[in-house]
Image (tube, rainbow, N blue to C red):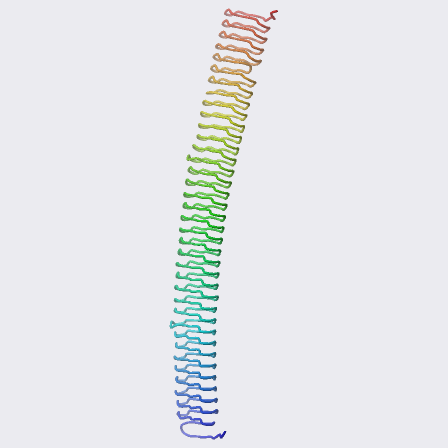
Length: 556
């Protein structure tokens, strides 16, 4: 190779086959380099060409400089078309606009002014101030400040939109952002996807953190991750899970599967196939729970439903609230039908259509009326106001201000009645009371303290206890037989009769006081039939005349 040095007014040449035709142009070395622009410069290499003033090629081969003051640092077949454009090196890179930059790589093209491609292969940007960091076949398609930092086959279509990396990602609107992953798409203004696979953000300012096949459709809605979740309401959020849908505005789902929130400010914590239908309703978790009412809430469990406003179910199975402010804490197959009714637990309990009713556990209990309560037990039924059944089995009360405390098959019909317990006792009347025992009965204002088969059927009558005693007269009392007269009294014994007003038997067996104000003190088989007649005791004595008197002796 033959070197020569040529000094001329047109330029400085150093090399073989070189040509510096531009005013003060220089070629410092290499082969077949051409500097046509004034003050242009080629440092070396071969087959490099400068066409514009102040352009520079520092080396390489087959590089072409068409831009004013452009720079190609080296490489092969690189071109600068824009003023102050720059190509650092690589192969077949292009800087088409003013201040466009390609630092290196292969088949990259910078079309926009002040745009930059750092490296990679077959990357293209067209907007002002756009940037591609590297990767392969990434595109910034004409809007200002677009950015692709890397990855493969990513697309940016919006002002100041960004794709960090990954594969086949797209930021399609202004200020949209995709961080990484595969086939994610941010279609709306200022929407963002951090990563994952096949996620799509259609709502302005929507956000997807990651996961797979998630969709954000509305303003400021978000999905943290998971699979096939959909945030459709404005400001709606899904943290994760599988096939969850947040449809209402400002609704949220933390996780789980197949959960749905349909209205504003609704929420589901997790679980499977739960639904919050109306505003401010929520489901904590569990399976197939449905909160249909405004501001209703279900904590968890399985197949629980609230159909009304302000209802609450804590958990359990197949519980149902059908009236406003109803509450079920837990258990199974419990139902609240009335306003502000409550069931704390148990199985198959019902608080009926009245107001402020409660069942506190047990099984198969039913309460209706107003402000009445059943506390546990099984098969108890209560209909009335401000009444209560405390435990037991198959007890029944119908009326106001009633109380049954335990036992079984007791029945209370009337107002202000009481049964303390026992089995098979019956009250039919107001203000009546049975303390306990077996098969006792009481009518209006009647009292049976206990025993078996006793009856207080007279008004204000009372039976103290024992067996087969009856107080049927007004204000009568019996603890040893039948007191059927007005204010008649039998104090003790057995099988006696007081059958007229103020008749009294104080004891003994089978005594009969059938006269008014008649008195028998004791003994057996005595009979005082006369008014004011008296028998002190003995056996088989008789006082038949008024004011008659028998001390009492035994008949042989």
